Image (cartoon, rainbow, N blue to C red; front, side, top):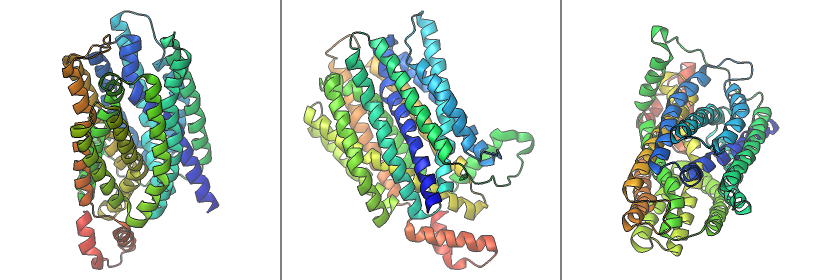
Length: 467
């Protein structure tokens, strides 16, 4: 128990750094580029989109390679260490405002954004796959992700509130405030990830022997792995679940500051209060999500949360848009849903590892994690590019305090309506997901019997619904 506790604790600490830099970049970086650097929203969207597309390629490679890594440090930890060293430097450079021509400025932030996304993938995908090795039981995986979520809330608080605090302290020098933000988050990230690397020593499983991909190389091997995984019914349902959430979450993040500032008329100080509310919801919801998931199952809990949140979003769109009360209610609803998603969805995806082992005789946690991560990243890249272009075409002008009605309507639809629809789609996919605590126990027993050459035909009916 002591060994497991140390591993889960060390694994969880890493999410302080992961959540702090991820939420800061997804929430503020486009705003930073448009309002501080002076880059047009369409070009800022292009920077984010191109970087996200590069992350897709990096994520595919790092997920596959981490499955096969034979380093003495373990399968996943070498990637964690590499990211720990590189990310602090990148974060400082990312929020440094340069004075240069428009073309050079664009190139600078594009290159830095690409390095950020590649480095983030180097940590995120092997680290997420690592969780399936540290915890192998159905409920144990829920507990591991709940612990991770608790630390992630700390990182989210830092990401949401620190930039606004620092801007308040240096309100006369916007560029300096962002530079200090980058330095502060760099320190948090380094301390968190180095602690994770140190405390998880000895937990990484050895690489399984994999067949050589021959002359076709790694790329074709990755594609083959993805095709095999996508043939699994359970995986296809989770892909819909992930895609729906990613679309809604990306729009929520990209449109949030714009919507609150220009549609509702909320100042930065008041927005920071809404972030306090978000963190409070995270803190309150996390233990309840853990308890309900242990009682009714992870996928059933997620189904209920997505359905309720999607329905609430549609009600707010038609009855409470562009009001402070509606904005506050929506932040609470979406915060409740997203904290349970980040807490439980990785654990749900971990269970595909056993399906993969039953069908193909492989445990490809890295490929599974990279597949869903690549999917989310692709969707985010498309959303941010479209958002930047459509925002500009809607008549948005960052120099205006009062935006035209067309821009306000675009922000309302992007921030509330489309995310609400996406959440409902995700709920429908989870309603059909066949793995729960009972069927997971059947699955693991079938895997064991198949591995040992014993008869497992008694489980065929249950297993057939998964594959």
